[in-house]
Every structure is written in structure tokens, then in C-alpha cells.
Length: 251
Ligand code: PEP
Image 1: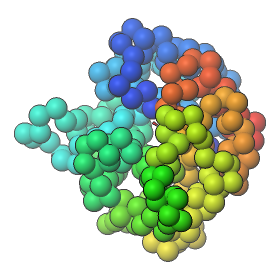
Image 2: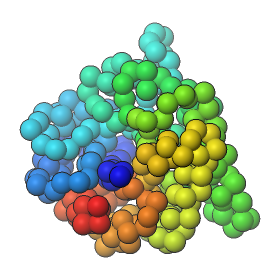
Image 3: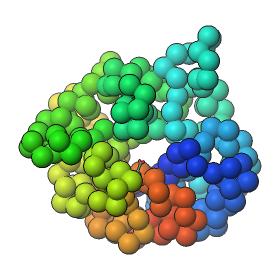
Image 4: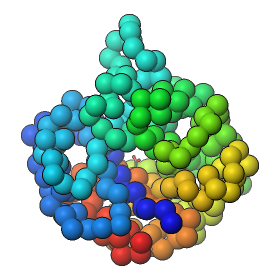
């Protein structure tokens, strides 16, 4: 039985004050909801105020990225050891990192390895572009991303995978629940090939791409979809708890 994870990626939004207020709204909104792991991923400068705002709540904190390097002369980077004192989860390989900052499966695997060594729980993102989907190669492409992004990682018991089709992120053009289910199943099959049936049964596979409080229930009822990675709606202190509630209702 996999516990659903609903993670909010705040990206480069919120001031320090906004972040604390949003964290408090999320904590209030999900108070008393069981059976779902709720995660917020604020900008790194807000990890400390957000952790104070969430003290005593059932909300976990995640980072939006991590360096693949353990320490040293890497201006602007944050190491896994720095983050592990502040948060539990970390998003790795988000399509914005891949498309804007030149990250690939190799980088994603390196960051995932470093994060796991520091005790963080990576949320590893994969997903095809519109061109790939329209060419009919989405399943093979995403399976290959899973292989590359987890290369060299022996134990994925602390890893979650987010299927985030690039064409659905921030566009309002959410993937249908049928596509989300099919791709989550493809990801699980890739995990069977790389690891084992047991590993595939245990790995949470999230869907991300224009999830909101109105459509969340349709993903929550998909057998292989174990939660959501949420961008825009995660900035709304009412909508985000609504998504968590949708997954709790079907857990
Ligand atoms: C995301 O950035 O991971 C995302 C899914 O964004 P949105 O929910 O806004 O599509």
C-alpha cells in the first residue's frame, strides 16, 4: 500500500513573508487529514522561516534542487548535507532544470545519488515534450528517462518519481487521467526491469501538470498514480489543501 504524496513546488515565487503565510495556510488546510504525505517546496531562502511556520504540523518540507557535488567551490549551489538539516524531500530533474539549465538524466542520477547519501528523499521528475508525445514515442522516452535518471542507484526505497509531461506544466492543459495512468504504469514497468516487482510496487509515482483542486480527484482514482506534484495551484492556500483532500478521499 503506497501512501500518496502531494508536493507543492513554489518555484521562484513568494517573499519570505509570503512563504511563511502560505505555509501556515497549508498547515491549517491539511490539519487532521490522514493518509497523505503533504510536502511544500519553497525557495531555498525560505526553508528556515517555512520550517518555523510548519512546526507542529503534519506538513513536510522539500527543496527544489540540490547540487550533485558534496561541498566546495560551487558558487550559488546548495549541498545535500546543507539541505538535509532543513528538509526531508528534494525535487530533482524538474523539466525547468532540464530545459533551462542544461540538466539531463546523467545530472539527475548524480544529484539523486548525492541526495540519497545525505538522507534526503528525492522526487525524480521525468516527462516527454509535446513533440515526443505527438511522434508516438512518449512511453519509450519516459522509460529511458527513468533508466538514465536512476542509473547507478541500488536502492530506490526512498525515491518517488513524478511523471510531468512538459506540455502540461503551467499550461492549463492537464494530461487526461488515462494518460497519467498509462505513463505511471510505464514508469512502474521500467522500475520492474531495473529493480524488481517489489521495488516497483513500493515506488510512489506522482502526476504533475496543471493539477488543481477540481481535477485532482480524477488522478487520485488512477491505480498507478500515487499523488501529485503541483506548481501553480500550490501557491493558493485553499486550492493546495483541496488537492491533498482529493487524494486522502481515495487513499
Ligand atoms: C510543476 O512545475 O511541476 C507543475 C506541475 O506546474 P503546474 O502545476 O503549474 O503545471
